[in-house]
Amino acid sequence: MKNYYERISFIKSILDSLHIPCSINELWEGYQLRFPWCEGDVAAHDGTYETKNGKVESYQFPWDDDDVTVLTPEEVAIKIIALYNEEMI
Image (tube, rainbow, N blue to C red):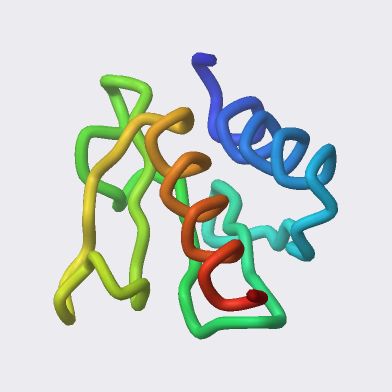
């Protein structure tokens, strides 16, 4: 997944398959995932850390500790799935 859209849409497709609500927004020259059920977001653009290594940033999730967390698209999808399942039970 070389470009920003591929990374963000990959995560969205996983979440969509599990019926986890989220939306893609344009952000700077990249993209962001937002969630109606929490404050967190996931972003990939020129200003996010390790973007050249195919990573994304999460922000305002419980694991972020008032900072950002740099993760692979797979890692962030797993964390969001777990959080959603915790929140919705």
